[in-house]
Image 1 (cartoon, rainbow, N blue to C red):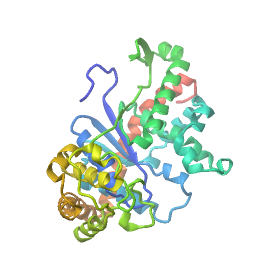
Image 2 (image 1 turned 90 degrees about the vertical axis):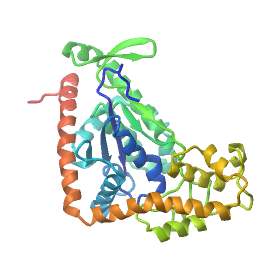
Image 3 (image 1 turned 90 degrees about the horizontal axis):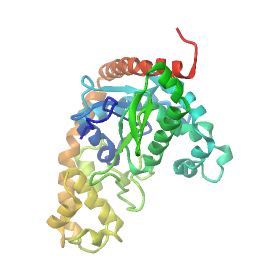
Image 4 (image 1 turned 60 degrees about the vertical axis):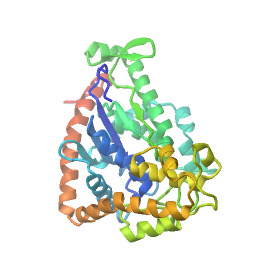
Length: 359
């Protein structure tokens, strides 16, 4: 629910990288949540193409991948007229604020980010500065709109906590200037009421299928980079492919348990139950009430039918939208112009706060 006591305009921001095919995990963990949030909040949804450069600098198909993410947003039900859909690189203020935040954040904060440690591996000295500073750009993405809420997966929660740290340090470091310019708002930080310019953004986490695992290995997150296409259901898969992948999904020989505790040592079973719960929008407990005691030979066909029912229309609509490149580009252009106007409002004040000369 929206927070009527917050001094900030209630606004949701989130982004998806254009790095390969979207899959079921992206849909249940992010995009479907985006659709639901637009009923309660003003929303800004971004294809974060600048972030994708931390993986590689040149993509022959980056424009097409950006359009594919946009098509997935639209096909899933995001309204680009009531809300804003755009790609990050159209709004230069993201990069401008990210540099300012690079000067606010501390190196020690960045070194603690587990995603940097995982992606940099043992050769950290050879990792790009962009990979290390990725969370600072993410903070800028959010705070250039002074967004109050961000739907994130568990793997991004630490980055959002860093966003809050950066916002709080900026507010503290420039508290005098914020007061002198009268651009702050009173906000509650713990038991203390302080005057700040940036909100301490809240995460929106949860749901029965917030984390979807590989169909071939229940201990690994479903990923578009997995070499096996059978490990994931792509949003562009047709009904026959969706059904085939569900039926080939790895399982164990035991029947489904009647209670959640029975799934703890069974990662593949737990994953498939979670997928059913997410698609049906019910709890995992309710799934086990319906299918507890049954073998996978009975559960998989039911899951396949449900997956086809929910995903095939999205895939069909995605293909229709992607065929109209001019329409997708028009959505991104309009969204970029509207997002840019909001971002510039923030940046004019930030420049004043830190003393940069501007017209």
